[in-house]
Length: 254
Image (cartoon, rainbow, N blue to C red; front, top):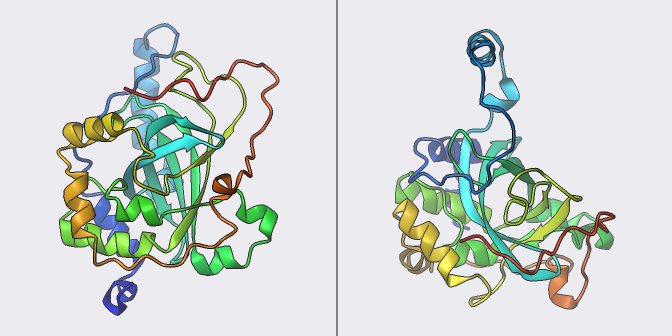
């Protein structure tokens, strides 16, 4: 990371990420239920005007990338992150399956920098994944912001780690959130992400991941903590699903 990149407050860079969301991505899921009635819409409008929502207002950064189920690398999906910057070392994100009003909440991701990860015990580190490849490959993007601002943001994110839990597995459960939360991981090498999935995202958002990869060649990849990305060493951590309904290795989003 360059000195100039470190000098720019992460909150300022992330605020720029909220300027534009890029192309629309519709939700892949239709929840069951009757259409909204007039009274419901009126209550929504009133709440929108009268109620303050500081935690929601703080979601001022938008990142788009890809996840896969820990232990099931072929179960892949696009993930739309709406994030708030708690400080220069901690970010928290709500993850959706799209970027429109009907998008479904898939889960959450907590992002910390390398200094904080280093302090964690080995058992905890195994839950976290690195962001080096996501940044360097061009797969992780901040849609809509100017390229120089995105580059500065990526210079910071390359030094971070994420812990991600998905609660609605929208690649499989097309009506309701079923089963238990699942630990998700990020890709660590070329050839792991489904190229059709990446190309579909790029086409929809007007993004060129390959061009971004080339433009980010100057971003220095830090050494990855050996305790993270534990799935690569055969350490698979998941919550056992008592319903037996999940088959995470079988599907990926179109």
